[in-house]
View 1 (cartoon, rainbow, N blue to C red):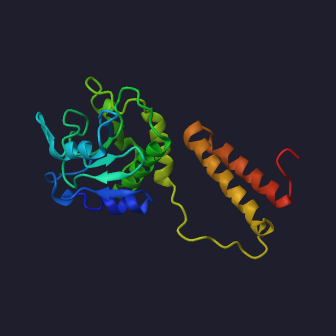
View 2: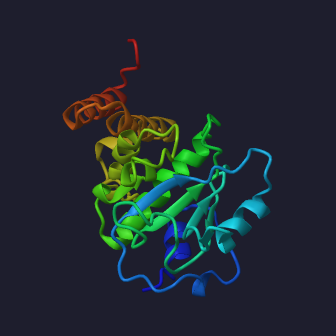
View 3: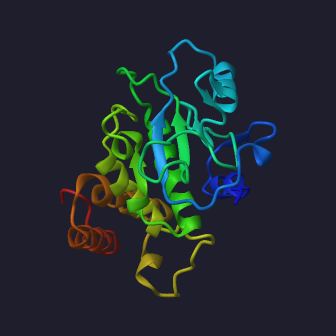
Length: 236
């Protein structure tokens, strides 16, 4: 098995993607994909992008490359390193019959940019959807090999999985929907409809990240829709 679909799936999720020459044939054939493993690459803050990604391709003196299928830059760009098997999780759960993502972070306290974590979540969810995997198939290296590994340091994997789970099941509409003539949304201005959509997105994040129940999210959304249609403004 070769993961030749990786760039297309990530781009379909509206993510920035680049490929490293030869990625299609790099790595041995995979028997299966049993999970997705998150890593940090432990590269020094001052190391160049080119040097870090070259290492992921060729490997180290003690471990031949490729060292992952995917890399994730700090600006959220995905880098496709290999379509085949990679040496990233040999002693861990699932072994190397898994997809490894090496995210740029030194692993010793370097902050994670929001754009990088958001891309990590969105890209992983897109891969899970393509493979038909649930969020249970997403683990940090510190979970697959807890006696030896700490990566991705600084990321709460339980919280990350909550966000990924919502993205796996959520499919944004591909075409705008037109309300029925006389329907309640026709009473809203463009600005009010934009406000309502913004509120829905905020409530989605409340459910995914802050732990609100789905019932609470639905009730708040319904109330805000009613307030907009009847002309009631916040605080009135």
